[in-house]
Amino acid sequence: MDEIQEEKTNNANGTMRQAGNPEEQAWTDKGNAAAQRGDFESAVEAFEQAVSISPDDARARYNLALAQQYQGDSELAVAGYRRAIDLDPQLIDAYSNLGNLYGELGLNEDSLETFQQALDVNPENDELYLSVGDAYRTQNLYQDAIQAYRQALILNPGNNSAVDNLLDVRERVNDQMRRHMEQERRIDENPSDASRYAELASLYLDMRRYDEALSIANQMLALEPASRTGYDMLASVYEQMGERDQAAEAYTRIVELSPDDADAWEHLGTWRALQGNSSDAIDAYNRSLELDAGRISARFSLAETYLEAERYEEAMSAYQTLVQQVEELSGDDLAAAYAGLADTYNSLGRYDDAIATSKTLLEQFEDDPEGYYQLATAYDALERYDEAIDNYQNAIDSDPLNADYYNDLADTFREMKRYDEAIEAAQQAIAMDPSLIVAYETLAQIYDEMGQPEEAAVAREQANALNLVTE
Image (tube, rainbow, N blue to C red):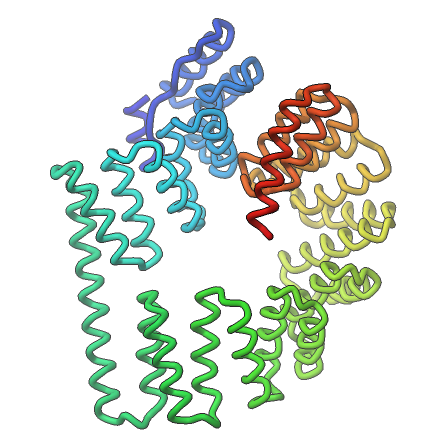
């Protein structure tokens, strides 16, 4: 398998693992043989049989995920690796492959977190430190990358990749320093020109040096207190930091200085919504649209905020307006508008309308996961459980990384008293998102109905612990 690994992918680590159950072993052997031939479709089918025989065997899950990765089904592989790790937190190869796949999918923070979790399990693994360094480097966190590469070399001085990547990061840091000195020189030439400070602050943002960027933004405000230039920079810094209150306050000042700036009003709406201040967010979005009725992004945000605020009639009207703007919407936007409208109909209890809207969405955008999900939600509410299950599974097939889909499927299996399948779906939801409180609650309810109070108590304790952290 190692030779195939070299040819097929740079990111799949490890070999197919052997099974314990004889029947499972027979399918594992078939899967390994198919993989050696390069027939990954047959390998996936064989490993799926092994998983069905031993669903709690982490090795079987790992084998299936690895075959899916070789086949190019990255999202299915991610779901499989997460479940394997959930079953066996010591499975280092699963962490490595998962971290690399997250990187391929552009989920850099998830990639870094996965490698760091692996280091908690195996802190003496130089290849993991190499991967951590690469993840930091991708996010321009160069000082952290340097420390990770150094640790890799402490553990293994012969790690040539760590040597090369450390040199690369050093050159990037040097380039940043050259740019930094050039900007400082330009400011020295004319210290009263606030625009020159903006370029330096932007450089600090690239370097993730937020304190320095904030200091420069405040210097700009001191130079030109009546200008919005400093507030624009302040807003950029707080946005990148994810500081909701400060970003909202910065945009409040910006719209006071430039009350006709539709883009600034939309940004203010975004940060008010993130603060949980739906009323002010709605006002800001509406103001943005008054100034520029063609802002599709603001119209979407307004509809979403109405829906989140449970102002369903207004959400319905907003989504209906979007659906009617067919010529102005891209394909993805039109699909999102139909999905939002179906979601609103479900929230209103208008399940037939939700079904009709979801089917319209799926007719135009085949295999859209939200179309299947909203269709499943409507069938679920109507107690048409078989149809609900089919569509939840279709949604998962289209988007295997969505933990909510697994949780709702688990709840529907519970309604039908198909408890083994319910447990599997709930555990997959937790594997995909360990912070999803409702999944632990679903699992506890399933165990309660199965007459397993101890297991239910464990799941409920986990939900309560997460609730405390959230609060």
